[in-house]
View 1 (cartoon, rainbow, N blue to C red):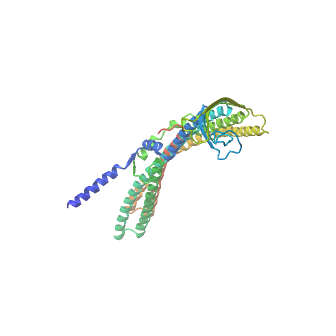
View 2: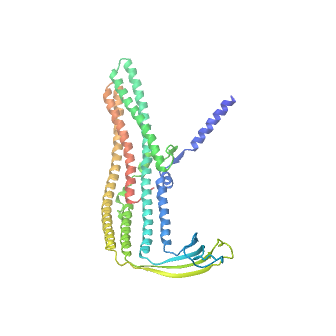
View 3: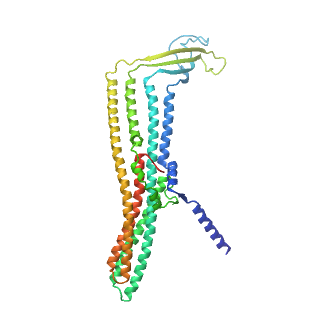
Length: 439
């Protein structure tokens, strides 16, 4: 008995632990979680950080660069006679071993490509930030779609189970009536056909529900099989997302992320033209170096007896491009051609966005209209099904008419659920293209 109590207590504790591990999300919480944990969003943020480091790297190339060097040489065999360093009567050319320890300080004085590089690094950072913004907008929309699909599957299961319960009751009652000789066998068979179809739909919806949860988990950045619970309601979300004011929202094309990306591409192409042109300008670099040189017949450079000779020099290098056989001209023209393409792409992007906004507004308005229409159709289908069920069991209606009314009701139920989801998704799409996210 004691062992049974222990096992029951363990199972109860395990059940509580499992429940505590379930993560619960409203739609807003799901979006916030995804923006912080989605793997694509994390990579986009890393791209921004990498762009910041690249900007620092570019700036640093124009600042003083200090490097040190140690050169050691051991002449195993000298080829020419020279100076007797060790006094043993053997005259060699130069010392057998030598070491040079020095440092060099380099500084750019003028380089047109460096100036362009600084501007390009700034633009590259903007491109990375725009890419992150676009990624966040896409993830936000993906979470809304995935969240809505899960709610749709949950609502569908609830409705289908309710329909199955009613159908099973109808089959049982009709079977009894048939066994008493007051109904034809075909009536029972018609209801069984309907019941079989609804059960098949139930199994398919269960599979779709599992896939919907997995898709949402991936979008959130969770393990694909993580246990989650959604706390928002599909119909309540639909009501929240019906906003006719959004249809009158101003169309500020320049706020759209695709327009920003196209505009940045144009700027980057302008900088490439400047870069090619800068290659025709002279460059001026300065240097300062210093070194100590030591010579000896044996390796004793680490001792205090070693004599070192110090040297130092300052200088500058001016590089003047004179003739490139048309190479610089061709590369500049190629860059200008790419700039023209970027300018044309910017105009095309603007026109496409105006079309997308108009289309998104139309789709959103249609979704709201369809929601009202499907809701009314569902009410009508419920009344028709109730009337036919009453007529059937009173003996004044056929099983075929009842089955037809039931099929019509089930279709209306699914169409209404889909209409609610369409409102939510259409609003998310319109907000994305207007760059006016609600969540």
